[in-house]
Image (cartoon, rainbow, N blue to C red; front, side):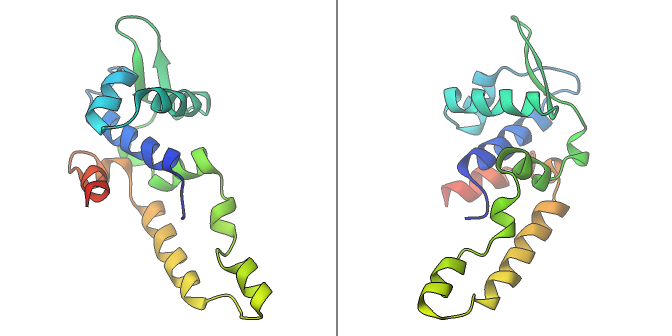
Length: 140
């Protein structure tokens, strides 16, 4: 897999935050409900993204989380690398198996990886917000 479930949850949460009024804060529990995510796990991801300055957080009754930058300026790749790092993009998934049985790594993986990376780099949070594409893709 190219990115973790944590990265998927972060993308879905960012898409939810992109739909909020600019400058307003949304509670983690509300994000979890809207994006159909486990709230306890999501809260940890949101805190991690706030520590990395992708989100602002505010405590209290009117607190929650908000995007630091406009959704148009945050790519899906920004989120995935902030959550997962880049190690999964740098390694070939069949590399170990190929070396064990003498077969070279599959060239088709490079094409697929390149397409996925291109999509993540050129798709913003704004592109996926509001159209439900993240939620619909998961329910298929």
